[in-house]
Length: 117
Image 1 (cartoon, rainbow, N blue to C red):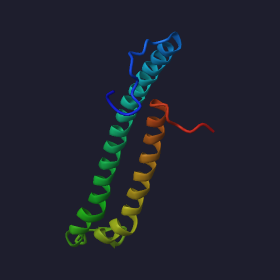
Image 2: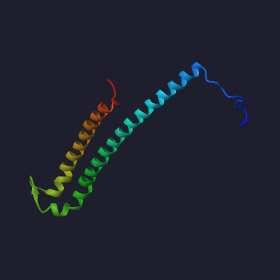
Image 3: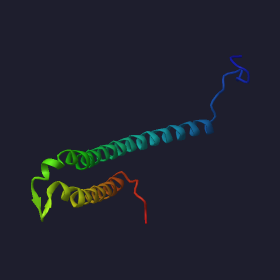
Image 4: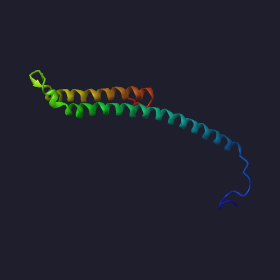
């Protein structure tokens, strides 16, 4: 006896056991395919998120760093640095959201994880 409750004789697989084993192997292969597809989906998702975060960082902090230099120029009667933060950054944030939603909807359809309406 190897452990308590272990079978004492070699079990001969019955026909139902063979079918169950074949079904489990097929399910495992399906899970592996889903896993690979989901990994590719998440890789694309992370790449998109990171690239849009870099754009957000640039709009928020890099433009702010150069605000005093940009204020030397006027745009529509306002200092350019002020205008970029008052109007341009909001437009950029809205564009980031639109790009994210549009691209994620395309990825969801491509990897078949979209929500049906």
